Image (cartoon, rainbow, N blue to C red; front, side):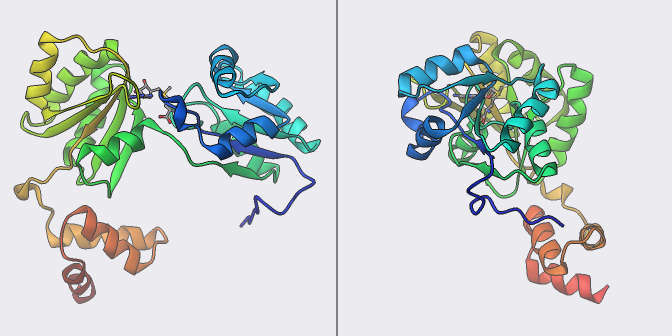
Length: 285
Ligand code: SAM
C-alpha cells in the first residue's frame, strides 16, 4: 500500500493536472490560473494551441511539449525535473488531462517515483454532457473514443445495449453518421440517446431523441463541431436479470474484495431492484 500526501511536502516537486476550458474561456478556475502562473513548467499537449489559450487568460510561463507521440520519451525528463524540486502543471488541448488525452503515463511514473500528483477539478466534456442529458448519472460508463472499425464498435454497443447504466462516448464529427448507423444495427431503434454538441460554445445544443430519430436527423444535416454521445440505460423489463443472476453478481464482487454491503447496494442500483430485497435473497441463498 502507498499513502501519498499531496500537500505536506513543500520541498518536493509536484505534478498538477490542470483542466482547461472546453470552449468557454470563463471556465478556467482561479486556482487553475494561479497554478499555471506559479508552476516552474507547463507540460502541454500542443504548445501552439495552449499558447493561444494561455495568452488569452494572461498566463506567461515556460511550456514543454508532452503529447501521445512523445510521452514515453518525455516522461523520464519530466520526472527528472520533478525530482529536482520543480512543479509541473500538465494541460491538454481542452478539458481534463488524462480524459481521452495524454497524461496517464506521467501520472503512473509520478506514483512510481513517489512524486505527489495533485488533480484540479474543472471542465470535462463527458461530465458536462452527462449532467444535462436527463439520463440517470448513477451509474454511468465512460468509453472515451470507440475503435473506428464497425465490427469492433459493435462489441461496445453490445455492452451499451445490456447496460443498466448511462453509456457515454466521444466521436469526431466526420465519423458520427457511420457510428450512429452501426449503433442502430445493435441497439433497438426506440432507445433514447442524447448528442451534446459544442458544449459551452456559441452553438451549444443537445439533440435528444430515439436512435432512429437522431439517425434520421443526420440524413438531412451534416454533423458539425464537437460531440459527446450518451446512450440511455437499458430499462427493458423483459431483460431484467433473475435473482440468481443478481446474487451471482454480488458474490463475484464480494470475491473480488468488495464489501457485501457495497456489492449489494451497487448491484441493486444498477439493476433497479430493491436493495433490501436483494439483501434478503443474497442471505437466504
Ligand atoms: N480532455 C477532454 C475532456 O476532458 O473532455 C477530451 C479531449 S478529446 C481529445 C476531444 C473530444 O472531446 C472531442 O472529439 C469531443 O468528442 C469531446 N469534446 C471536447 N470538447 C467538447 C465540447 N465543447 N462539446 C462537445 N464535445 C466536446
